[in-house]
Image (cartoon, rainbow, N blue to C red; front, top):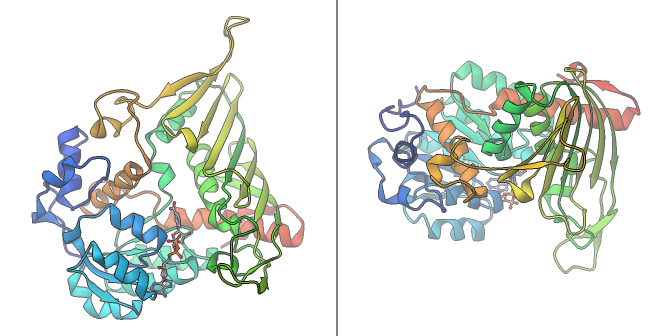
Length: 408
Ligand SMILES: NC(=O)c1ccc[n+]([C@@H]2O[C@H](COP(=O)([O-])OP(=O)(O)OC[C@H]3O[C@@H](n4cnc5c(N)ncnc54)[C@H](O)[C@@H]3O)[C@@H](O)[C@H]2O)c1
């Protein structure tokens, strides 16, 4: 049985002090809210095992108090040693299967390895009744993601998947505006996630070592699809075109020898939403110059919304009927009216950052573990997202529209 987390400090609403207390109670540290460290009450601490301490894992580690990391696991000894410098008391393991030999030492597991390992690393945790935070995409295939969701629900544990951009308070504001009908009937969604970290000079890595469909459509495509579903509701069908832009990459940094690549570098998607709206969605990791263009425009019959993660504290709102010659988008700026912004800063416009989204994300998981609320997105939603990704891959292969219902 999973250990019960006492709800006292974890569940008390969203005032700044309470938010800090509940977050601190679980040992979660926001780099931008150091007061959390000072207010920490370790009585309720949650012990974690972390599998994968590389790029993403290291970020996740930065959010967690030293005392809470019981086990650190990474096949790469240099990454493991680097991560353990900040967590000297954590047990160090190289083989993730060994993590579960020490299952009494932790309550939840954080999976931050490549997606083809997620299911293998997660399923034992579910059998042992451990809560799981898993990086996105949940699995390389929707069928694996569904198995993971089924197993998690059968085990009755809480799950969360790292679609952290959904935790930006501006996303809830966008949802609220859409639901209020202030921008009328929704007509279309244009979304893009473009970055340039896999440009022509980037060497081979697990990111590009798989088949067509294992590349950017799964990696960044899943993020922009997660936003599409969050804001617009279910997608019914898609058409997709995938492209490998860099056909061969250096086998390792600086090497002359190259390896042929078939994984996709660009994805272009047409989408039909269940609400009747149409959409275009793009993903690229070869978009030279773009560092974080996770952006969308949502057009309604009476107005529009526009957002880009590069300006994550702003939402652009256009409403029809403005005075001629004075028409334009209005910039809505994040402030304490957009919970839980006020828990970080009482002043409007002072801005949250990426790490604050991670704090909000993990706070939601802790509340869910304490039996208060639902961690989101959970494995079931991550499966839904993966169904869309798989449908795009099938559409590209079969050159036809694919209904999401076809993908199980
Ligand atoms: N949510 C986000 O914004 C975000 C951002 C980046 C990456 N990610 C996701 O995080 C996951 C990891 O990506 P990353 O960028 O951290 O990758 P990475 O390659 O930087 O790190 C992965 C780490 O896992 C280790 N590893 C690999 N196989 C292992 C195994 N079998 N057992 C133990 N350790 C193992 C590697 O040695 C490495 O240290 C992926 O699913 C990725 O899509 C999410």
